[in-house]
Image (cartoon, rainbow, N blue to C red):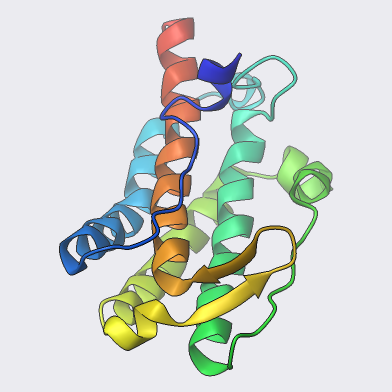
Length: 174
């Protein structure tokens, strides 16, 4: 089950990072919307409503979750960059995935949201210097993190959820 839940492995926050690594993570964030769109375009409704694993979210919920999560991430970056060691707000991801728009809504809106959001987010990320990447914030469930660690997390997050869908497609032979 762990392979289905974590097809690219669990996330591990690096304690340090180099500019080249951060540039790679920024490119992964830049590519995430087109990668996600590429893997779901043309999937019929019944396939979008297939869970990626037993007891897991449907493909539709995964797409909406990534949009919800990345909107929150974008705000978290901006808060961390403009406030002194702020505490960011957590949210109930599983409950958000059960709201009607995420459970039943068309994925196109979330795919478009991701494309626009990531364009803006990546423009910001490409301007960040060492001091900005070292800024700290507090997550109520995880503890204190640096902006660079958040960057790594969301680069992983997009690839993680894209892999949920691509591994389902491969297993089902779609």
